[in-house]
Amino acid sequence: LNNAWFHARAAGIYQTPCRCCGQAREHYEAQVIRVDGQLHLEIGFHAEYPKAAENERLLLRLVAEERIWRPGLGDEAVAGDFIGRAGWQRISELWPTPDADVIDEAIEVAARLADYVITLEPVRRQRG
Image (cartoon, rainbow, N blue to C red):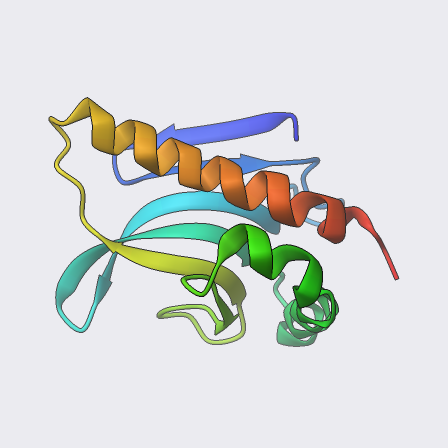
């Protein structure tokens, strides 16, 4: 992984952008999102290709290797539809929104995002 982005409500890590559009269609992200009117922090992996079938194929391939990544991510990691956007897929978890003034919480978020990268990236790179 050789690229990153940061803004007020999210941080992400990705490999080479998609050839068709220049976007990071497969990436790891920690972002503040709204679920049922409440703010949460989502941490994990996203598949965001324009065509839902591409995202579904990728997620199915990753889920087929769940025995490899599940021990490293635990039961908190949910594989399925992206929260709030039809067609995208995810392996991620929700946390309460952290206190921006507590450095330990920021370190915990960064460490958990690193868990996703370390655990999923070897599986993601295996193109079947």
